Image (tube, rainbow, N blue to C red):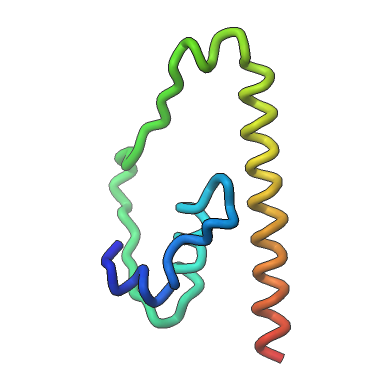
Length: 89
Protein backbone atom coordinates (compact mmCIF):
# COMPACT_ATOMS: atom_id res chain seq x y z
CA UNK A 1 0.00 0.00 0.00
CA UNK A 2 1.37 3.40 -0.93
CA UNK A 3 1.91 6.17 1.60
CA UNK A 4 -0.72 8.35 -0.11
CA UNK A 5 -3.30 5.57 0.37
CA UNK A 6 -2.45 5.35 4.06
CA UNK A 7 -2.88 9.11 4.34
CA UNK A 8 -6.33 8.95 2.70
CA UNK A 9 -7.33 6.26 5.23
CA UNK A 10 -5.75 8.14 8.17
CA UNK A 11 -3.45 5.19 8.84
CA UNK A 12 -4.02 2.26 11.14
CA UNK A 13 -6.68 2.33 13.85
CA UNK A 14 -4.52 1.76 16.92
CA UNK A 15 -7.56 1.11 19.13
CA UNK A 16 -7.48 -2.45 17.73
CA UNK A 17 -5.13 -4.64 19.75
CA UNK A 18 -5.15 -7.15 16.88
CA UNK A 19 -6.17 -7.23 13.23
CA UNK A 20 -5.20 -3.61 12.52
CA UNK A 21 -4.06 -4.67 9.06
CA UNK A 22 -7.35 -6.45 8.31
CA UNK A 23 -9.39 -3.45 9.45
CA UNK A 24 -7.23 -1.10 7.35
CA UNK A 25 -7.66 -3.26 4.25
CA UNK A 26 -11.43 -3.41 4.68
CA UNK A 27 -11.58 0.39 4.97
CA UNK A 28 -9.44 0.59 1.81
CA UNK A 29 -11.83 -1.69 -0.07
CA UNK A 30 -14.81 0.40 1.05
CA UNK A 31 -13.17 3.71 0.14
CA UNK A 32 -14.36 5.04 -3.23
CA UNK A 33 -11.19 7.16 -3.66
CA UNK A 34 -8.78 4.19 -3.79
CA UNK A 35 -8.12 1.82 -6.68
CA UNK A 36 -7.12 -1.79 -6.18
CA UNK A 37 -6.64 -5.01 -8.11
CA UNK A 38 -7.08 -8.65 -7.11
CA UNK A 39 -4.28 -11.19 -7.47
CA UNK A 40 -5.97 -14.23 -8.98
CA UNK A 41 -2.85 -16.43 -8.95
CA UNK A 42 -3.88 -18.34 -5.78
CA UNK A 43 -0.30 -18.14 -4.51
CA UNK A 44 0.02 -17.47 -0.77
CA UNK A 45 1.09 -13.91 -0.06
CA UNK A 46 1.79 -14.48 3.61
CA UNK A 47 2.47 -17.26 6.08
CA UNK A 48 1.48 -17.60 9.72
CA UNK A 49 4.18 -19.20 11.85
CA UNK A 50 3.72 -20.36 15.43
CA UNK A 51 6.65 -21.54 17.51
CA UNK A 52 6.39 -24.86 19.34
CA UNK A 53 6.89 -23.04 22.63
CA UNK A 54 3.96 -20.75 22.05
CA UNK A 55 1.71 -23.40 20.53
CA UNK A 56 2.59 -26.52 22.57
CA UNK A 57 1.25 -26.58 26.14
CA UNK A 58 -0.81 -23.42 25.83
CA UNK A 59 -2.89 -24.41 22.80
CA UNK A 60 -6.25 -23.72 24.50
CA UNK A 61 -5.08 -20.31 25.72
CA UNK A 62 -3.73 -19.51 22.25
CA UNK A 63 -7.09 -20.39 20.65
CA UNK A 64 -8.99 -18.32 23.25
CA UNK A 65 -6.81 -15.27 22.60
CA UNK A 66 -7.31 -15.62 18.83
CA UNK A 67 -11.08 -16.08 19.25
CA UNK A 68 -11.34 -13.01 21.50
CA UNK A 69 -9.36 -10.95 18.99
CA UNK A 70 -11.65 -12.00 16.14
CA UNK A 71 -14.78 -11.25 18.18
CA UNK A 72 -13.43 -7.80 19.10
CA UNK A 73 -12.67 -7.11 15.45
CA UNK A 74 -16.14 -8.19 14.29
CA UNK A 75 -17.86 -6.11 16.98
CA UNK A 76 -15.79 -3.02 16.17
CA UNK A 77 -16.29 -3.42 12.44
CA UNK A 78 -20.07 -3.80 12.84
CA UNK A 79 -20.04 -0.57 14.84
CA UNK A 80 -17.97 1.10 12.11
CA UNK A 81 -20.47 0.02 9.43
CA UNK A 82 -23.42 1.27 11.51
CA UNK A 83 -21.71 4.66 11.87
CA UNK A 84 -21.11 4.88 8.12
CA UNK A 85 -24.75 3.98 7.48
CA UNK A 86 -25.92 6.68 9.86
CA UNK A 87 -23.69 9.28 8.19
CA UNK A 88 -25.16 8.58 4.75
CA UNK A 89 -28.74 9.25 5.85
